[in-house]
Length: 271
Image (tube, rainbow, N blue to C red):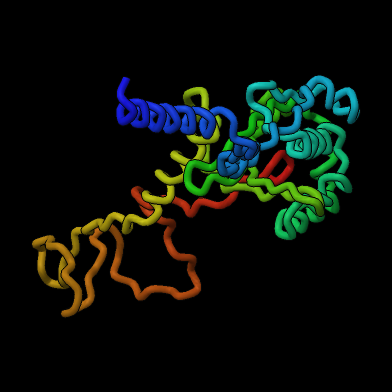
């Protein structure tokens, strides 16, 4: 090997050895990998499960509810406070306990109860109750909770519906208006919804104007009957003499086609 070539080979070998030493024999510590955690995601709060509901049978035992009160499990409210309030409300009817009932009534219904107690009608009506079938639900109009009861009284049936509210201060029940002959008109499985449908129908009929009847009339001296059109000479009823009207006599009752005004039907003993 020539000196020049040897010199170049030694230099190339030194470069290779130097690179190898730098790559393998460095005294500097290897860099330590720092773990980077992923950004934490906000935890979605879990909705607590609803509290367990006590069965109606157990509540009736715990509260000493009269056996004449019947509230099916599938027609009962979904919370214990509501179940207790409904059971205790109708238990007061079964036992004729006006004090317990009065504490859960609105002022208007409480005043009516006082009148019934004074007249003796309350004791007479409640003493004849042989059963109370109850179901609960909500009003289709406003979603308010309702409780419907069918009272078995002296061989007959008397339905009544109440709105109710239950809070920390207790329970309050407010009677809903009852159309006439309602027991014969309820249908389907959801009597609460049917009740409000019938009530809406009754209110729609009450809002219609009374039907007008045209009574044949005639003028004095004219033998041809004609319909009274108002104004002109006074009309005469052809079926009786033309005598002046007596303001002291009571007016005639409403004719056919007029519907009596609908009032709130009372619970047993409220008429």
